Length: 220
Image 1 (cartoon, rainbow, N blue to C red):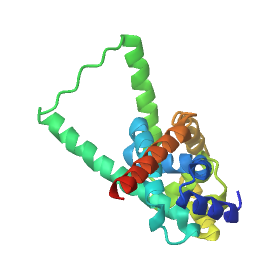
Image 2: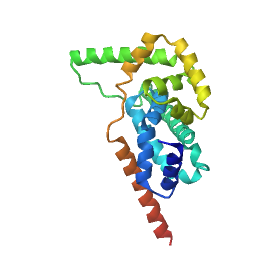
Image 3: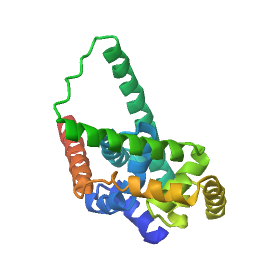
Image 4: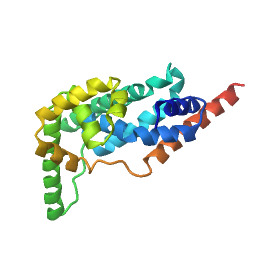
């Protein structure tokens, strides 16, 4: 998608065009999800935050001064929501440890439990390897080598020049051995958004738009 096409879509979305915004969601859904997942380390929570980020963006499009700055603006929304979610999860975790909240015991057989532990251990190893990079290097590596995004689109999403992104990719790859990158790529295949993700986001946007119109009618 050319930059001019994206700007036109953002303008239409500002006018309440949910079909135009659906195209934007499909373009950026994996990027927004990756942003949330890197902070939350939880598939379900990251998916919820990603959906909330798109609905919030749709509701706040009038606050976007220039359509060309949409990608980094969207990333900032996703990041802030993910940080808020992580803070909330830590608060609930503290309550659980204090005995205020009790988690129900998992009902799983020994084979399923063993498989779950193996998957968790492997996933944790990969996350630790990728997380060993600074955030400056980690996101370019994830976006370009795990999510298979072009350097141009990744640079726009991160709000930096393509030259700066290529430099970060070079530095990141020097710190990661080839086998570690391949391991990370294989592991993160698990963390993919469901096929109806964009549709669910649009439903949320339409509900928001309907409530906004209803509020206007009640005022008049």
